[in-house]
Image (cartoon, rainbow, N blue to C red; front, side, top):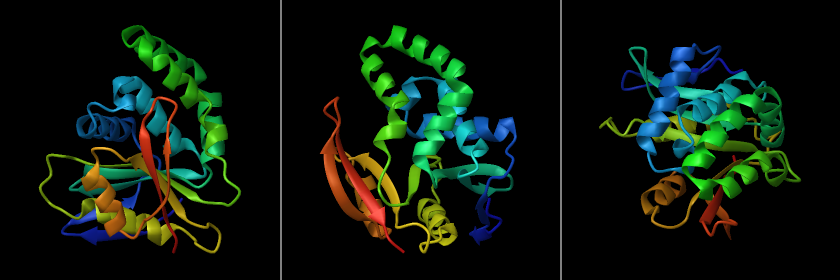
Length: 210
């Protein structure tokens, strides 16, 4: 875990170490508020909360937060070994994920294929080189102060040892997502490839090399 800390407009950017359940719940609710129509959000609070708990528990992963007066305004979830992260996540939380997934599958039968793909993700994220995955970034949509997302990314860049890791990697939707794609380009990420998922979703994959 890292113990660096930076400050921007009285907003503290830091690694979230040994988080309380209330902090993980706040992060989960932030995700659901910012991305109400995303697939993971539709799986429900318990599924998402278990996922973010996994980032906090995993030795090679973590959560970076932006907070003001103790209130979390935004966060990044990342992993330095994304494949192993998913394997460990499934190993330790398979029963809870199964219960959450069953409920989602009943409500939305079309989700079954994507759920099966999610459980196999440890294989699909393996690459020849070592990299850091920026798995999720979120800022409270009610916050008017700009620059929190960039500050979170800058912090991640600062703690990544680019002698050990080739790049920071992330994926986002290619369609109807111009503002987000421009945001990553503005922050120094380079479009490395485009692909289409089995469900027909067009994705952009970006890399930042320090």
